[in-house]
Length: 343
Length: 59
Image (cartoon, rainbow over all chains, first blue to last red; front, top):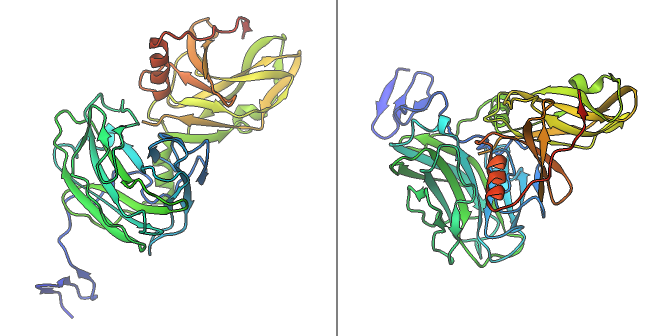
């Protein structure tokens, strides 16, 4: 067997493998600028219902909800997937007759080289029924405000069914969103656009249902979302799970106050004194000094746990302090922390 | 939702504590690229005032 070139099949190698298209210029390295496009990473949880599914809420890592109101759709990480995928994001209609979708803001550091040229968005999707959920669209949006200071709610008006939402100032559609005619079977969809808005700094991906007569329980499933340079949609770039998790941890991470210094006892000399409790290092350097949220710990001879950066805020870690309530050994432990530095 | 100032050991304002409507608390660093701090600045610009920092001994 020798290598052969066919006019319609492409290049056939001696092992009978076939390369149907030329290798793209951007198929190596950080090909897919979307993080968690396969919807695997769910540090916040795998299900988001009332109270957790408000317009603008972050859900599966890096993905946030855009909807015409709160509690429009429940969000779940599902195993309803096309061949070769592990997870999808499922958007389940909870409040009928409202538009909804998901979006991801790409950090300027990760898209500066794509701005000014063609980019291609691709993903796989299906709906549970096309009776009502019959107009799904996608958009590549340029942000021309300050880099990485993006207003999450890029929608100023959702508009009537079939009319694309109006975007806020500094947000611009780079493609002309049209009905993708998503069916009840998974299929691949792609759009290409030139990101040519002057002074664009960030790229935002937005996939949404553009209908206003939905039925309770309708589902939209989306997975394998990819944004790459060039005008051709190539195969979804499956990265190692650890790599994908670490990419997500730049924006959101979780940890335990049972680890590190939090587990050991300290000795309090005075009561009613704010003293050191524990130190915590983020799994990866975060995008920015994050907002810290703490659970309720088990207190021993202390109370009122608080986060601190010890004077200088940091994207590498933080510490906690407590108010000592009795002279002697003290500690606060047995709970978790979250750190948020989303765009 | 309310905000409360948090001091460093040296008495400088280090962070802002956001007391959420559900009772949970978030500690927000004074980084202008932090989205929650941006929201706090916008809240201040609307004429709101945060709760003062607690007074007490720190070590």
